[in-house]
Image 1 (tube, rainbow over the protein chains, first blue to last red):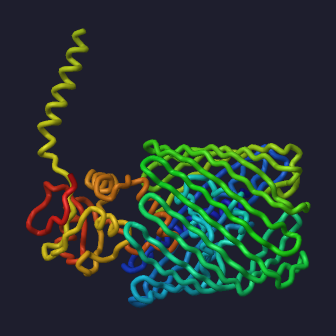
Image 2 (image 1 turned 180 degrees about the horizontal axis):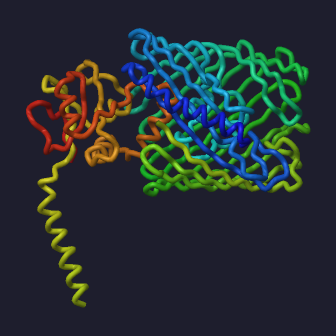
Image 3 (image 1 turned 180 degrees about the vertical axis):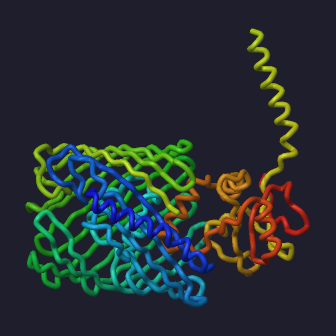
Length: 349
Length: 145
């Protein structure tokens, strides 16, 4: 982090922390914030994923956010999440999502605006480190769909039968984003995409599955209005002291960006304030192209609860690149076995 | 040897005191407004405190209130009635809140006396206190063994 960045970051944090004091005057406004300060270091001579390099860096895993939610009428509310994230060039504040929520009857709500793409188990709280046990969710799955929010509408219907709660979330919208890739920045736009996700669970077990289709345009690689589809499924078991999580995602993309699929499986055990965990993951593709991302990894980590609001996490990830692929590195590292050490402090307020 | 005996004697005395103290240190009870005529089981209470149900079984609106973190009644309530420890509950709400599904989260009111006071003046309220604090201003809806 450059000194200027740190200053900007401090100003942002101070601003965000000061916000609740002035805003709390309004009883109905709810304010929730989160802060993750993360550091990571790899032993590879190439940049990994969102900027992990062979010296200690804070940028990739440092983020602060504030969520404001205010009722407009009995059935309409407005929610926005402001994010200042370290993996952007500056710590500029950005509204990561902002939507109006309309309650239609007791079990249905409709959101319009900039909403989160409900694809993965942790899609809606990707930036909130305190909501999952890793420093960052396994990128072998989460990089398969490198988009977390879109402009459009989503509906949510919730219900329950017996001890099981379920929700169905259909959505429709469009999205434009510049996504950095090993070959340069891609001006990606997805039009007219439609998808749905289904979540089913009880106290112990949660299952989520989803799919979406859209029309993809990426001028840099000659993709013009071609069909894209995504599929994902995930499960979590949180039983007594045992925590098991697993997800799978696949994408079907036109043009030179390879179709890919990724999965991970995680086993954790809650021992008092400690939650040690181990995760195996793989990202793979059948396509033979220089852009193929193929890697396997094993991650061992522990989460420690510092107090009611804060977590300390430490993890060590061992990546094995497959068949000469650079995996999620920007360029091919000289060794196909790479270790990454990461630590973070995550809190919510 | 002497220290050993002394130690076990002390442990014995402490244990005995603990046994005597146990009936006095009562469990946690779930309370509602004095006018509340609902009867609830542990599962229904858990659903209200996890934001999965927003109404009492009778159909009236329910508003759950929490004691502050660290209170013995709070620890007891979540372990015995909701069936999740506080770390799990915290992780659960972190996920719900930042997914925009934080509606219905219990409001933190204060200690047991503050919760009793708040519940006694709000017909929709549901809270929990140590049973030694119960008086006629509130109604016991459920008692954890």
